[in-house]
Length: 489
Image (cartoon, rainbow, N blue to C red):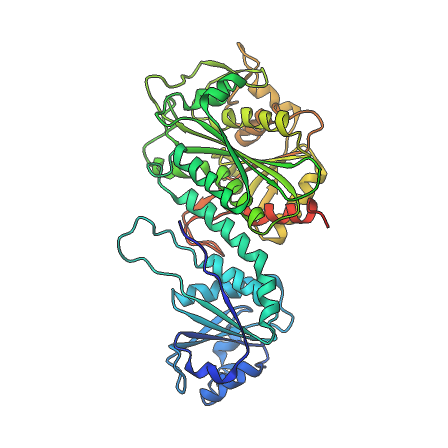
């Protein structure tokens, strides 16, 4: 597992700058103005910063862009990194600078000279997020994370500002590790163990085993995992940091590997199905974050952990299963398994915890990637207010999300001839009919969002704050949603 680096925050000490032997980062305004720490660097470098500010190279740099000056004279540093930063620094500017700085650092130690410390915690946060690398199974070529030291006039204040962001980084890294982990390592048993380990942070964690689910009538979920040697499980994480109010519920799809079952997927790209537990990974990351920052809210996270394999005992196309709710489901395609898992977990969450609202997350459909690409998750909701609040949180955190339609007309596509409902409705509106299926297992008047994260959970190219692979999408947005809407004052 990969723990994020914890930045150091130190008081401004101009005399120590020349002796730092990593990379030194300084700010310069678009008009070439520099603060006191950068002036010391400029003096040590015999006015090299001023010469840069008068060059076309600097003029062409974007805001929050970086320029590297290697082997500076008069300093022990291997490089000085100049960050072009406007006087009025936005959160987006700060995070863009931090992410760029982390890429340039390439594992080296960095001394960031902030002076007044404007947005220092945001820069450090983005730096930390972008330093992530998954190298647990490499025996060589692993680049370690360098240390970031933030020099500020009020280091204590900057460190205090960073505290909650550090907890968010912990949650994001936890999610990324889970999603990146290969399926022979992250079995349902191992996944459950890692979630139980979160009890060390104050979460209350329990597991429903197959016998428990059998008694509850969860045959929709159990049918998915019956072809695997890995036992199906539901893991429940409770964080009770609020008052006596009912909790908000987060529900995640945790298919640790998805072959498609009897409706076998094509071989090409099947190796990517280690990420089909991405929804459960995000829920786990959010719950870790809430616990580590001692959120003043009551939240319960529930994840359904299964493996979808084509065994002799595997579920077949044409089978009919009965959900915990009591609805019967005709299984047309065993590769549409995530909705079968979520159906029972969603119903259990509502029956058991009577939540004030529910958000579920799942790498549910390829159709959402066709519609939204890898830039946005699909947002399906029965409640305009809940949707608006979540979308606002996602927008602030710059985690792409786009609301998609629901409607009674789509229900016609999933009517079954022999059961109450069937699990697929054909190619047309595939992500919408999947959401309509899930909505059937949401109680009347229960505020609910379904997030289809198939396009954003793991990607083939690097993103703003992550290398290629697992992104940790959703941890920041959901944590902000909880903070803004459910935490006690």
